[in-house]
Length: 173
Image (tube, rainbow, N blue to C red; front, side):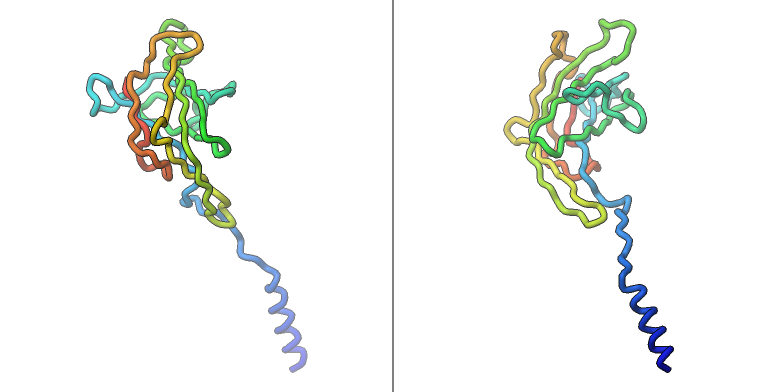
C-alpha cells in the first residue's frame, strides 16, 4: 500500500513541472500590412493591374518582397508599416528593370500614422495596429530625379489598419 501511494505521488509530481506548449495559431491576427488597391483613373470603379512595380522602403537596397517576388504585377499589394516609428517612406517604381529607362517612373509616398501595441498572447506576443493621420495621412512627391507623377490620385478608404481583409488606400493611375 505504501509503495502504491509513493508511486502515485511520484507519478503526480513528474507531471507537475510540465507546461502547456505555447504555439501561436496560424490564424491569429498579427501586425497587419496596409492593403493598397490600384484603379484606372479613366474608369475609377475598375481595378487596374500595375506592371513590374517595385516598392522600396526608405534606405532599403532591396525591394519589399511579396510571396517570394519583388515585382508586382496585379491590382493589389500589401506593404508593411514601421512598428517603431509614426512615419514611413516608400518609393513606388513602375516598370522597374525595364531596358527602356524612359518607361521607368518613380513616385514617393510618405505615410503618417499613429500606433497601438496590443498584447495578443504569450505564444504570439504583441501586434501593432495603425491609424492613418486623419489630417495628413500621406505625402505624395516625385522622385529625386523629377519625371511625371504616374500616381494621379490617392484616396484613403479606411484610416484604421487592424487587418488585411480590406483595402486601406486606393491609388488611381
